[in-house]
Image (tube, rainbow, N blue to C red; front, side, top):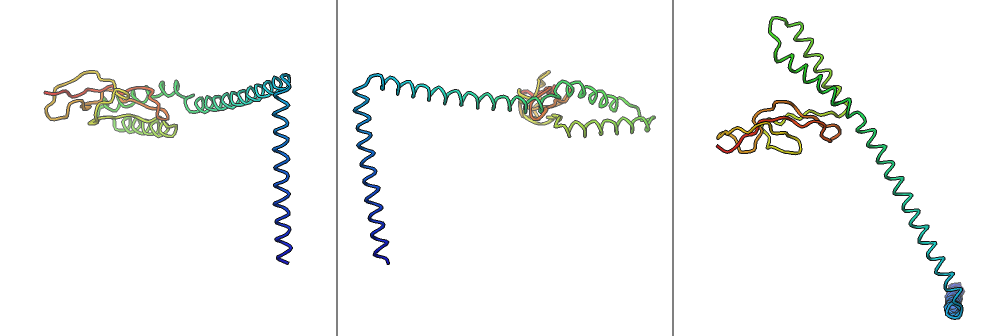
Length: 185
Protein backbone atom coordinates (compact mmCIF):
# COMPACT_ATOMS: atom_id res chain seq x y z
CA UNK A 1 0.00 0.00 0.00
CA UNK A 2 2.83 2.40 0.73
CA UNK A 3 4.13 1.68 -2.77
CA UNK A 4 0.86 2.94 -4.24
CA UNK A 5 1.05 6.11 -2.16
CA UNK A 6 4.64 6.69 -3.30
CA UNK A 7 3.63 6.17 -6.95
CA UNK A 8 0.70 8.57 -6.58
CA UNK A 9 2.94 11.16 -4.94
CA UNK A 10 5.52 10.83 -7.73
CA UNK A 11 2.79 11.15 -10.37
CA UNK A 12 1.43 14.27 -8.59
CA UNK A 13 4.89 15.82 -8.54
CA UNK A 14 5.41 15.01 -12.22
CA UNK A 15 2.02 16.48 -13.14
CA UNK A 16 2.76 19.68 -11.17
CA UNK A 17 6.13 20.00 -12.86
CA UNK A 18 4.51 19.53 -16.26
CA UNK A 19 1.87 22.18 -15.46
CA UNK A 20 4.57 24.62 -14.31
CA UNK A 21 6.50 24.03 -17.52
CA UNK A 22 3.36 24.75 -19.57
CA UNK A 23 2.75 27.97 -17.64
CA UNK A 24 6.34 29.05 -18.24
CA UNK A 25 5.96 28.36 -21.95
CA UNK A 26 2.69 30.34 -22.02
CA UNK A 27 4.40 33.22 -20.20
CA UNK A 28 7.13 33.14 -22.78
CA UNK A 29 4.51 33.22 -25.52
CA UNK A 30 2.74 36.15 -23.86
CA UNK A 31 6.03 38.03 -23.55
CA UNK A 32 6.88 37.39 -27.18
CA UNK A 33 3.32 38.38 -28.17
CA UNK A 34 3.75 41.59 -26.20
CA UNK A 35 6.95 42.36 -28.04
CA UNK A 36 5.21 41.80 -31.37
CA UNK A 37 2.06 43.82 -30.60
CA UNK A 38 2.51 47.44 -29.42
CA UNK A 39 -1.26 47.82 -28.96
CA UNK A 40 -1.22 44.98 -26.44
CA UNK A 41 1.71 46.58 -24.63
CA UNK A 42 -0.18 49.90 -24.47
CA UNK A 43 -3.34 48.16 -23.25
CA UNK A 44 -1.42 46.33 -20.52
CA UNK A 45 0.18 49.62 -19.46
CA UNK A 46 -3.29 51.19 -19.25
CA UNK A 47 -4.48 48.26 -17.14
CA UNK A 48 -1.58 48.81 -14.71
CA UNK A 49 -2.34 52.54 -14.64
CA UNK A 50 -6.00 51.86 -13.83
CA UNK A 51 -5.01 49.37 -11.12
CA UNK A 52 -2.77 51.97 -9.48
CA UNK A 53 -5.50 54.62 -9.73
CA UNK A 54 -8.00 52.24 -8.14
CA UNK A 55 -5.58 51.44 -5.31
CA UNK A 56 -4.91 55.15 -4.73
CA UNK A 57 -8.64 55.91 -4.71
CA UNK A 58 -9.25 53.10 -2.23
CA UNK A 59 -6.45 54.38 0.04
CA UNK A 60 -7.80 57.95 -0.19
CA UNK A 61 -11.29 56.74 0.74
CA UNK A 62 -9.89 54.90 3.77
CA UNK A 63 -7.96 58.02 4.84
CA UNK A 64 -11.08 60.19 4.52
CA UNK A 65 -13.10 57.68 6.55
CA UNK A 66 -10.39 57.52 9.24
CA UNK A 67 -10.15 61.33 9.42
CA UNK A 68 -13.94 61.62 9.69
CA UNK A 69 -13.97 59.10 12.55
CA UNK A 70 -11.22 61.05 14.32
CA UNK A 71 -13.15 64.30 13.86
CA UNK A 72 -16.27 62.72 15.36
CA UNK A 73 -14.26 61.41 18.31
CA UNK A 74 -12.73 64.86 18.88
CA UNK A 75 -16.16 66.47 18.67
CA UNK A 76 -17.45 64.07 21.33
CA UNK A 77 -14.40 64.63 23.53
CA UNK A 78 -14.02 68.37 23.19
CA UNK A 79 -17.57 69.47 22.40
CA UNK A 80 -17.93 70.58 26.01
CA UNK A 81 -14.89 72.87 25.89
CA UNK A 82 -16.79 76.18 25.70
CA UNK A 83 -19.22 75.04 28.39
CA UNK A 84 -16.35 73.85 30.59
CA UNK A 85 -14.59 77.22 30.26
CA UNK A 86 -17.74 78.97 31.44
CA UNK A 87 -18.43 76.56 34.29
CA UNK A 88 -14.89 76.74 35.73
CA UNK A 89 -15.51 80.45 36.29
CA UNK A 90 -18.37 79.41 38.58
CA UNK A 91 -15.99 77.08 40.46
CA UNK A 92 -13.52 79.97 40.84
CA UNK A 93 -16.27 82.21 42.25
CA UNK A 94 -17.35 79.55 44.75
CA UNK A 95 -13.72 79.16 45.90
CA UNK A 96 -13.43 82.94 46.31
CA UNK A 97 -16.68 82.97 48.29
CA UNK A 98 -15.24 80.36 50.67
CA UNK A 99 -12.03 82.33 51.06
CA UNK A 100 -13.81 85.58 51.88
CA UNK A 101 -16.68 84.11 53.95
CA UNK A 102 -16.68 85.02 57.60
CA UNK A 103 -17.00 82.38 60.27
CA UNK A 104 -20.24 83.85 61.66
CA UNK A 105 -22.43 82.19 59.05
CA UNK A 106 -21.48 78.51 59.18
CA UNK A 107 -24.65 77.34 57.41
CA UNK A 108 -23.91 79.46 54.35
CA UNK A 109 -20.26 78.41 54.36
CA UNK A 110 -21.25 74.75 54.53
CA UNK A 111 -23.73 75.23 51.67
CA UNK A 112 -21.07 76.84 49.47
CA UNK A 113 -18.61 74.05 50.34
CA UNK A 114 -21.13 71.36 49.38
CA UNK A 115 -22.01 73.19 46.16
CA UNK A 116 -18.33 73.54 45.25
CA UNK A 117 -17.66 69.88 46.06
CA UNK A 118 -20.60 68.77 43.89
CA UNK A 119 -19.43 70.99 41.02
CA UNK A 120 -15.86 69.66 41.27
CA UNK A 121 -17.12 66.05 41.23
CA UNK A 122 -19.19 66.80 38.13
CA UNK A 123 -16.22 68.43 36.40
CA UNK A 124 -14.05 65.41 37.23
CA UNK A 125 -16.72 63.03 35.87
CA UNK A 126 -16.51 64.86 32.53
CA UNK A 127 -12.68 64.82 32.72
CA UNK A 128 -12.30 68.53 33.40
CA UNK A 129 -9.27 68.34 35.69
CA UNK A 130 -7.97 71.21 37.83
CA UNK A 131 -4.26 72.08 37.71
CA UNK A 132 -2.93 73.21 41.09
CA UNK A 133 0.85 73.23 40.47
CA UNK A 134 2.03 74.64 43.81
CA UNK A 135 5.66 73.51 44.38
CA UNK A 136 6.02 71.98 40.90
CA UNK A 137 8.59 73.09 38.29
CA UNK A 138 7.26 75.82 36.00
CA UNK A 139 5.89 74.37 32.74
CA UNK A 140 5.01 76.98 30.10
CA UNK A 141 2.65 74.50 28.41
CA UNK A 142 0.34 74.47 31.46
CA UNK A 143 1.33 77.54 33.49
CA UNK A 144 1.20 81.26 32.85
CA UNK A 145 3.82 83.13 34.89
CA UNK A 146 2.33 86.30 36.32
CA UNK A 147 5.48 87.36 38.16
CA UNK A 148 8.87 86.06 39.28
CA UNK A 149 10.00 86.49 42.88
CA UNK A 150 13.53 85.84 44.19
CA UNK A 151 13.41 83.04 46.75
CA UNK A 152 16.63 81.43 48.04
CA UNK A 153 14.65 78.64 49.75
CA UNK A 154 13.22 77.26 46.47
CA UNK A 155 14.74 75.98 43.27
CA UNK A 156 14.63 78.59 40.49
CA UNK A 157 11.64 78.23 38.14
CA UNK A 158 9.46 76.56 40.76
CA UNK A 159 5.82 77.54 41.22
CA UNK A 160 5.64 79.40 44.55
CA UNK A 161 2.00 80.41 44.51
CA UNK A 162 -1.08 79.76 42.38
CA UNK A 163 -3.13 82.87 41.64
CA UNK A 164 -5.74 80.99 39.58
CA UNK A 165 -6.02 77.25 38.94
CA UNK A 166 -5.70 75.95 35.41
CA UNK A 167 -7.89 73.27 33.84
CA UNK A 168 -7.61 70.53 31.22
CA UNK A 169 -10.37 68.75 29.31
CA UNK A 170 -9.39 65.18 28.33
CA UNK A 171 -5.75 66.22 28.70
CA UNK A 172 -6.08 69.32 26.50
CA UNK A 173 -5.40 72.63 28.23
CA UNK A 174 -8.46 74.87 28.35
CA UNK A 175 -7.04 77.42 30.80
CA UNK A 176 -3.44 77.75 32.03
CA UNK A 177 -2.75 78.11 35.74
CA UNK A 178 -1.73 81.66 36.64
CA UNK A 179 1.30 81.32 38.89
CA UNK A 180 4.07 83.12 40.76
CA UNK A 181 7.46 81.61 39.90
CA UNK A 182 10.64 81.62 41.98
CA UNK A 183 13.83 83.04 40.54
CA UNK A 184 17.45 82.80 41.66
CA UNK A 185 18.22 85.07 44.60
